[in-house]
Image 1 (cartoon, rainbow, N blue to C red):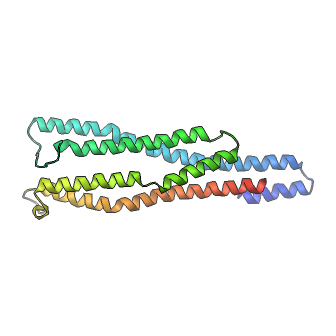
Image 2: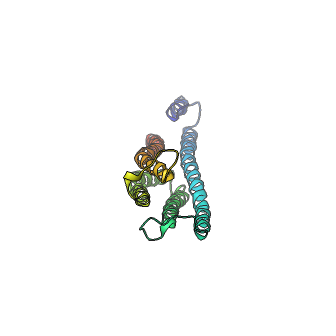
Image 3: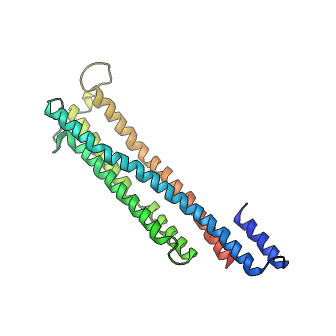
Length: 220
């Protein structure tokens, strides 16, 4: 049952003097509080899931770098790229981006812990709504990710000696690099859509926060 319907029921009962008016207000506030708790819990779960996912990549990437070092020590890695750092630069860039993303998510989680229930319910929700509206408008992470993907694409093409050496046959040189290059292009194209989908998740939760704030305003 929607909060508005429940509020109408309590107000009707109070108006008909079937229950105490103050008791009705308390119950309405409790209903709104429970609803806001549900919205905040969704935000917290989303961030915790993202945090665990990025943390997994951050932990995994050093093993990739160690594997590359081992392969390089056996002379099994090519160094065709003119980029400083050779075969290690790409995994290091990915690791740096994941650490940045992890730090951003941790900052959001800490903000929610600090802000929610600090002051009145309405003050907390207004601060959280304003904070997450700002986040959805930021594009720093998207720009960084697309810059890294563009760098990887250029580095891959340099390793192949140019786009004219791309090879999609079952034998011959640069087969892996050719398919990897196409994969990076497709991934770069998909980034805006993935970001938009993530923003939609925020937008839905922000809409719920808006509704909760409207409920509080009507109660007042």
